[in-house]
Length: 314
Image (cartoon, rainbow, N blue to C red; front, side, top):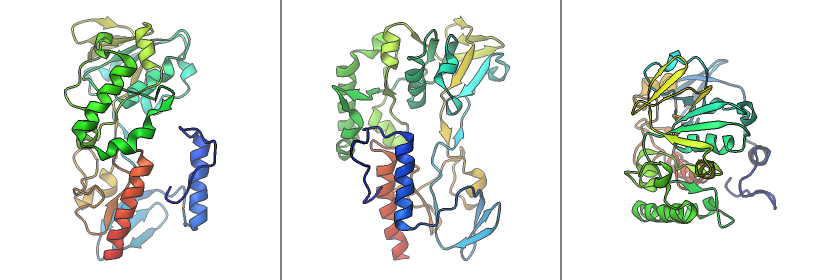
């Protein structure tokens, strides 16, 4: 957080408790009045904003929505999906990886969430995994030559998308070789370009690629239909998984909260102006809603400064 650091010897990928402590210490230092466990039901606009919670109505000149893009899981639109007779989990409810031991697992989606699921399943004994892939994406290793790749993201963020696309492809080739030989489709767009233009995060490998190379995970085509216990893949192949994990993304789910203000698109994500923080409604801002080459915390820092300047100028 701005002006705040993690203690010495904190891992490059901080643990859950490290992050919780970091946020708590930051709030206490600045004496923020943080109210947990309060659900906001809706936001309406009058002379000021009327913020309706389950407990009371709060009036404010400025509202900042920072609920994140990954608020509501999206299930796959597959014919017969509801008929599956086995266990179905969205990646958001993946749970303890050891609960999948000895199971045949179909992971639908090879984006950031899908790779994260396979990263965990790769360490579980006796588990067979199918990874259903519809379209290709560049893949980054979590670490390369012993270094955490995300440490280079602030530098990559400075480059034009085309340059970052080339750098990401180079790192992928150096780390994994030709992933096309593993059955992974060739991407039609660069990873940095998709991230900046479509907000599609880059998959990160932490064991999934090795699992594919060793045959523990099989890359298969997209699912065309599900009928009870059977899953039909494009091309006609039938498989019979015990568990389906849907790694098919999320939306911000802002329809009920902001639907009356005209700042939400058809799938519940915020509609923002070009700077990424302002809405079309004066005084309504979005923070931490845009994935980027740098982390959400880094983005939220930049966005927070922009929002603070805009509020000061009102």
